[in-house]
Image (cartoon, rainbow, N blue to C red; front, top):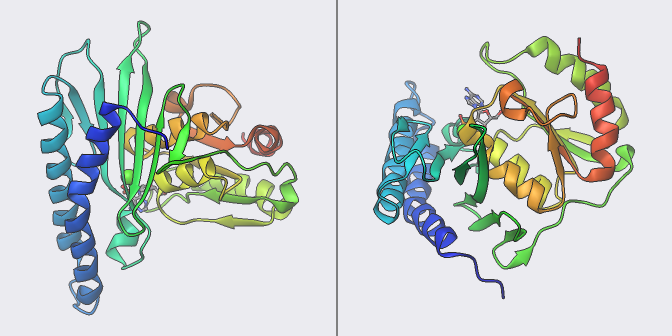
Length: 270
Ligand code: 2AM
Ligand code: CA
């Protein structure tokens, strides 16, 4: 059985500490669906509570590290040390609607001399299934104690592709539509499940063969990107380059499919 590092142990402990309350709140939210005002405020509280629990655990373990978190934003730390990137509830819309598909995402990034950041540890934890997708740079991607590998499918017509659709004026809907028009006719299916962190974890696990989305935040994808890479997959911007974060475009797949998908996606860009 594989053993992960002390750092991963800290991350997993933080996620598991926040999980029971998230599970209880999720069950509660299903009952609130009937109230007319809706459970939005309640979910926002659940989100903040989970983030606070994770923040307390992580900052206790590494007091001088900075944070980037969805709710509280940036918390400064020692600039020469790694930093935490935390999404306490990825898939908020699912949570709000009583759909059991959401996750906690925690990544550790190290500063590089050129000012960019490298993810070195990643955890995507699904509280309802108790699935723990984790990766460490150079040590592979894992689902609990099982090694993960991206799918081996190389035929687009057999491939299941995940995506995220722009919403509420976020993102470029016209561009998404063009990419969809190029990809959808040639693949076995498209899924929009609503959690970017889980989409990437599932590409790493070979459940999805590929994935594209744009206009995300760092905390949605930081952990998932390392999971895909460590599972032997490719992840680039829509033009096949390494400017994912700068361009805010994410295209992930196994190596054989990435090339084919990338041609379709890049060909549909203006
Ligand atoms: P979130 O659940 O943490 O908000 C799905 O396309 C991705 O977009 C999710 O990772 C989701 O992260 C993010 N997202 C942010 N705001 C969203 C919204 N209003 N509707 C759907 N997804 C949203
Ligand atoms: Ca998110």
